[in-house]
Length: 471
Image (cartoon, rainbow, N blue to C red):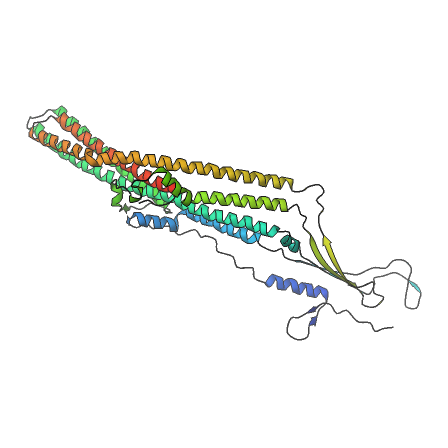
């Protein structure tokens, strides 16, 4: 009878030299402890919530654009979407971890049992414990061989590129809003300054009118008319101040400021006049549309979304191939020639049988997504054409109004008011003539500020429509 070898458990190479043999339960416990001690992989930091923004006392257009790019909440949200898409790409390219299984047990005998002397005895447990080890690839090999992993990566990569293009599109659209709001603040400052000048002029006129009333040159009714004009000017000062506060608050929100909105001035003198951007001199709709088709990030994002949908459709069709799982198993119970289960290695293969369902729902949904993205891209192309056409029309119309104002209407209204004021002071013009000239002058300046606001709004909307700055 041959020598009996005791099974000493799996060998673990913990240190260079002889392997250490441990019983299987202790070996499994040690492996679990080592796995728990492995640090998790490093993760990219998520975009942090910025600290409250302190706006400077004087803000330029360039400074406002810089603050928006650094602290704008819309861009931070877009950055978070990009980070999420990067995580999806990493997950799509991941290879499934192999699965390790282990078992330990004992076998009980049944039937006629005898002791070592051959006398009948009660059946008990066999002296040899049973060990088992298994290793499975979790379908990783066939996932690569069938191309499913590559298709997942293609879809996730297209989604990441689309997220980055959407981030650029957020910078385009909200950046245009920031520039529009800067112009609104500048014009609100001009309107507030002009309202205070008018109020001061009306106060002087009221003082002059009361002096003339005391001299008996005019009646109390004339004084009442001037007082009404003075109170209307005061009303305009308060309304202009409120409009300025609203414009500042909206600009601060777009820049990412939180809490109480501080008092600040916007220093952008170019926006206080209707200067024509050099890039728009002689611009035509076809030329601007061609530039928009090349530069608009939302068009690029729509094309990438279509590529993502097509990759997802190819993956859904490829999923009809069953996931084959390879496995390697080892089992043993006893070590002698009479062992219940001698050392046995088994190579296994498992796959689901697609008899009842072949991914019809996923394929139909992916086909619908491809059609949707194609229609969205077509709709967006039509929208870009409409944006360019309307933006150019608004720019031309508002520019004509501003040029007419700056070309003579403002100067003539101011000249008419000044002449009538001198005549009124000398008694050569009536109070009604003076009040009418003043009212016409004020209305002309207010209309000019409105035309300037519409003009720069049209310029910045046209920039957003084209996808680049035109100033």
